[in-house]
Length: 399
Image (cartoon, rainbow, N blue to C red; front, side, top):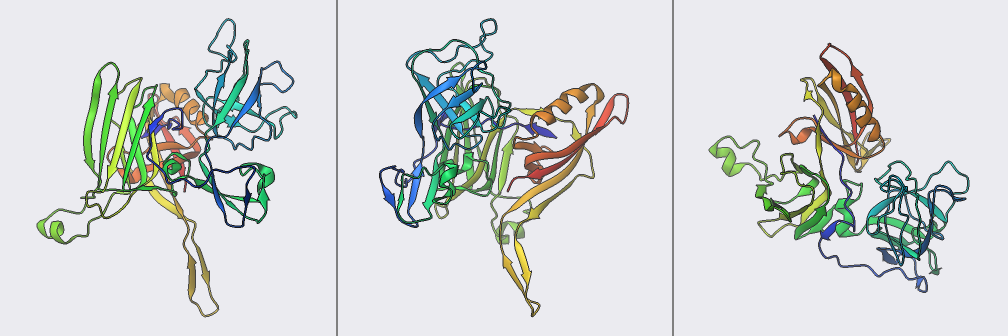
């Protein structure tokens, strides 16, 4: 089994992700009618960054920010951002242009709608902020959301604010950002889906979930070595094509997921993925775009189970008929893998670290059906032998 903690994709590392037909940008001076739709891309504000020793410690003061947990935020300044610990400068430092993530909880009662804290990773631990700072700081959030007005006479109600929940309905990400949010069901839709990102940390895995396309080109380059990888992969299923009759008469089926775990590792790579429909008859779809570095969690043992949870509602009428409201579904699986006993602590700590972060699990190389994007639910390790132990993992996927 391989465990991949996805690298967040946001405005800080996207080079190109396509061109949307935008909704009107929300304007505080405009009045919106019932059903009007607006877009909120990158709200910005002058902010105060509070250090660990301040009254509201390790926080960002942003009036009525309305930002949800995990929202990426980037800071710029006219002077210097907090420089970090005097002895260990990287600790407690805020770097201009780097994406941090909103955390809306705190052990202090001083945190309210005008403050949030930061983490280095989505749902990560709250970042302690230290060091000297100067100048005027600006925060820019990466939301890229669409909202629908729930009432007429809707004026100066900030769509993302909790106090505006009776005025605006969150309809999810704009089209080109749907493949980067945490929902697998919502899909980016385009004649060709072109994604180019620059990642400044090692990666070896690419995964696409809830997709529809006929082919996918993957190109990886870096500044030192130039082109590292350039391959085109078919996204047409050939699993049941074993004779001439099947070749000519079996309906063409497209793969709904695809992954690569053998990409060349680079610390500063530009990864470009182009999904295409060779027939030019159907739009390409992508529900989730994942890149990251894989960790080998041992060999998956026989007896593994895979399945799904259906959220559809089936109601039986008085006449015995059924009315079905089709809804989304999520994958689930149970894997048992054999790991070295000496590595128990490392795996235990890894599973703890991703307990609240959507993570990609691949049960076996080449077996797309064993791929689950979600969480490990109550994993356990049985110290079976002196040299080897069994890691049992129940996986619960996102819908």
